[in-house]
Image (cartoon, rainbow over all chains, first blue to last red; front, side, top):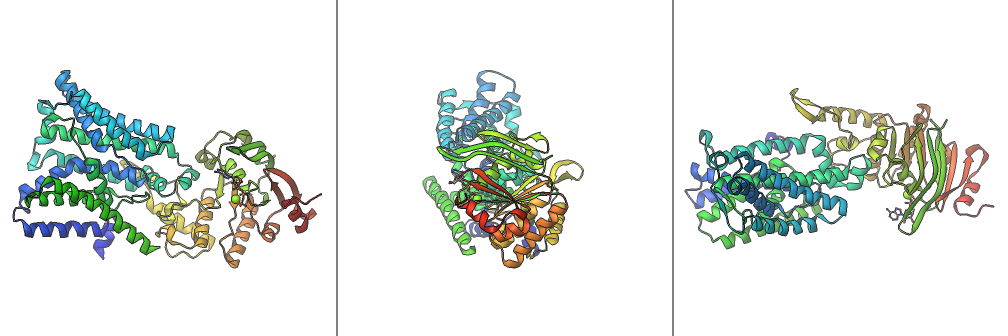
Length: 316
Length: 247
Ligand SMILES: Nc1ncnc2c1ncn2[C@@H]1O[C@H](COP(=O)(O)OP(=O)(O)OP(=O)(O)O)[C@@H](O)[C@H]1O
Ligand SMILES: [Mg+2]
């Protein structure tokens, strides 16, 4: 009872947490390595990249939108940041600026076209999925850009106090994002927009500006995820983030974000991302081929939305 | 001096001319009934007052200011509130949040973190408003989508009254209400009038309109065709204007 109210206050669904615990228990029984410290870090480390993407996805989906370009924009950001410092020889901070700016720009373009041109988000971001990936391949001539400076590698490979840097980044970003979505007018307007756009407009919320900011934020998250990815693998990789939108959107949905808008929680999404991480890691430990893993994630996504539909129909 | 002055408003949706030169004045504290057939353009006219629809031509003046080009938020800030026919509530958000939607009071968390929505204040003020309206709602923490039609209508009314409005537009506020609740809305209108708040009441129930309003305006095919003092007219005359059978 006390736990339930605590979860409710943190805007987390008890079911998501139960699934995470149950899944972890199953994995621990199947594979003795699962619960080792090293492996748990592996899970969180793998989760960090698409966990950050999933934060962007949560904001956009809560507002009844969708961003299919997340993974491609991650790749574009990775290549842009690496290109600036490795190919152009600019100082290391430009890797950070390049990644974030590329992500923000792609997101802002998405938002502008959706708002100004009234083109459905589904189409605009699907188009951007192709555009950003193409651009990443063009900038890098289709090859990875290696050899990033020490300072950047710190963001991906260092382990201050024994914990990988990306984990710190994920935790800080998630806490800030949770604060914004759950406790600020911006968050309230995001949920209201996803819930009932006409109501949001009638109460004086500037829905166009809100949308523009949401897609820009989503792009910025993809840029940040691109930076972390680049630092971790020491490569500006044009194929980075391939299919990550699938992971990010699935994490958000199984974390309790309503696909049709109006409800979403960053802490829930983090649990969703961990569920995806545990699932992938467990399948790895069981030596299941990567091809099957893709299938498994797709199945989880459809099942999560299906269950949600059954739940909400039961309620009405 | 009038509080609201509409001059020659025109509005079309594509080829459909919905408003064809509407002129109307409302004084502070005046309660007017706006009646007309289905599709006469009543809701559309009201949405041009709140700014949800921009007008094609004409001017909206409020409180001696041209508000024609202001957005809905700016007009709410000047004291124009509306209870929409479809209520305009966010169904998954709770009662208290709906009442404060678009107007969330904020504070600094721990004195540092900016724009933290003051949920405690929202809850307590929403509860006060609900109590003042004398409605029974199981909890202000319920999503409004889980409430009955009448309860939802009350939430929409509460939202319109929370921010000291000067003009409240009510588009069919009694449509979903039981007899007792209808009477309490009519009492509420009387109370607003005594506090100097102007009210525009849209209703198909002429009995209610005659009880609550001092003036009755008839809209037909996008124009005002009659502007009647309640004391100098009767229900038959109003009906004949509505159906276009007058004179
Ligand atoms: N958003 C819109 N797009 C296109 N046409 C619209 C729109 N809103 C209203 N209309 C049209 O404008 C006309 C007037 O509609 P409006 O809702 O203002 O009527 P009303 O007087 O409020 O009717 P009712 O008594 O049924 O509520 C109708 O013919 C309607 O089809
Ligand atoms: Mg109407």
